[in-house]
Image 1: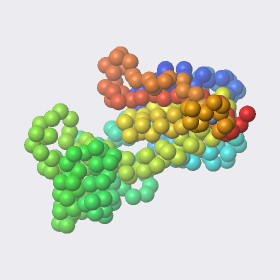
Image 2 (image 1 turned 120 degrees about the vertical axis):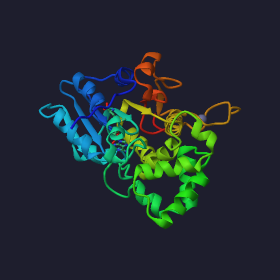
Image 3 (image 1 turned 180 degrees about the vertical axis):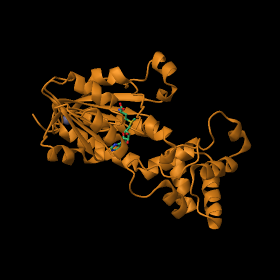
Length: 315
Ligand SMILES: C[S@@+](CC[C@H](N)C(=O)[O-])C[C@H]1O[C@@H](n2cnc3c(N)ncnc32)[C@H](O)[C@@H]1O
Ligand SMILES: [Zn+2]
C-alpha cells in the first residue's frame, strides 16, 4: 500500500522537539511515518512510540520501521496515549508530537469516503470502526445535523442543508459521498455555488470532525500528552483549522499561567507557578515556500510548549 502523506511544517516541528539520542518520544499521529522517521533518525538508544488510530497507517508504519530497535508502533487513539505508553513500559517522555487531522492518504483513498471528488460509501472513520458518516446523516435530526455543520464547519447554509438531507432520506438513505455532495450543492444559494472551492467542503469537514469526535479526542489527547511529559519535555502540536488551533492555544495558555492574584496585591498569596512555557509566542505558520509547494498546508499552525513542572503549586 502506498502512503503518500506530505508532512507540513516538517523541519520546524522536528527542530522544536530538540530530540536527544537517548530520549523517549511519542508520535501520536504516525500517519505515513514521515515525522516518526525523522525522530528515529536522531535516536541511538532512545525510544519512539508511534501511535495511529488508523489500521492502514499502523500497517505501513510497522513495516517501515520493522527491525529498528528504537521503534514501537501501536494502534490506538492518542487520547489513550498515557495507558498505551504505560503498557509499553514507558512512564514519562521527553517529547510528544501531534500532527492533527486526516492524512493525504486518507483523503486520497476514495473508499475511505472523506472526499467529495469521487463516489464512495459515506464513511470518514479514521479508525475504521464505530458509526460512519452515513450513520450520522441518516439517523440524526435536522437540528442535530445543522448544529454539527454550523459548529464544526461554520457553514452558513447549515439549516437548509440539514433540512434537505432529512427530506431526501425519507425516500431513501444517503449512502455515498456524491449523493451528499450533490444534495449540499443543491441546498446552498447560487452565489455560493459560484465561489471557488466545492460547496460541500464545509459540510464534509464538519461531518468528519463529528464522526471522529476530533475536538473531544484532541482535548483529551492534550491533557494525556502533558501528563506524560517529564519536566523539561516538549509538546508540539500541528493543527489544520481554527477550532483546533484555538483549543491548543488556550490549553497551552492555561498551562503557562502563573500567579492569579489580583494585580493590586503587594505580594503573591496564591503561590501558583506556570507549569509550562511557550516556545513560539504566536505559533508558527508555513513559510511562503512551503505554501507554494503544498497548498494543503495553508491553514496549518505549529504550537510548542516546554513543561516546567507537574503541578502549579510545586516549589
Ligand atoms: C496529518 S496525518 C499525520 C502525518 C504524519 N505526521 C506523517 O508525517 O506522515 C494525521 C494522522 O493522525 C491520525 N489521527 C488523527 N486523529 C487521531 C487520534 N485521535 N488518535 C490517533 N490517531 C489519530 C490519522 O489517522 C492520520 O493518520
Ligand atoms: Zn499569586
